[in-house]
Image (cartoon, rainbow, N blue to C red; front, side, top):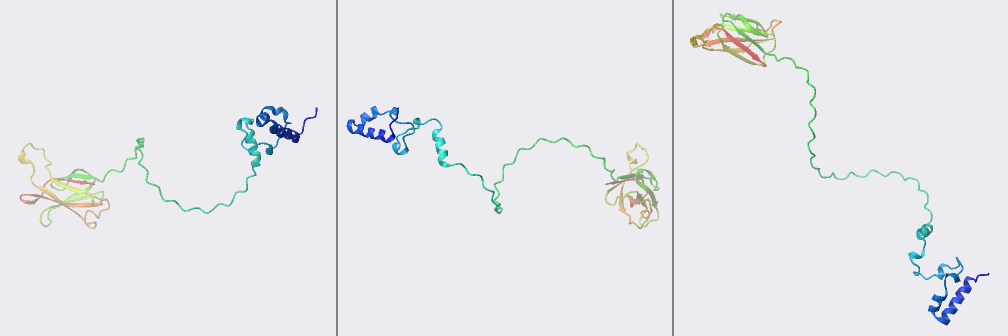
Length: 223
């Protein structure tokens, strides 16, 4: 059977509308009266179709087709100049204190301090001590007897302490010596500092109520 052409269908539709009104056309003309793929955009009223009238994805496919295929990415342009540095941001809050680290290994022991001490007898003899090379007395010195002590190390930057001491073991309070000792450093070119085994030295005098005397005393160089 030969189907009517699109122009014939439209003509019949116009005739039916003229004879029976739009209600007749809406009722009598169905999709069976229209040849498939015969209607065009001009035959459809704008805004008369709903999304429900299309198959799922049909509108998106039509939109992509209208936009055309995406072209290939062009070559990367040249890198522009570096912009100026921005202003520094505000100072952040101080973070929490981290955990205490492990204790490190114990270091090597340093050299011993240049400390010397000794007990000098009334006659200038070194009775006991450490770091003292020589001790002697000059009884004919002007102003009274003078004791000379030579140290193996340089104690010129150390604290020198001297005090009168009794070398005898006594049990009488009156036997405790009365007085004090005073000291002064000796220059490098004076005995005994100029000796090869002596690095520094002091001169000591012992005093009591009678003046300068010969008496045992102790000396300590604390560095």
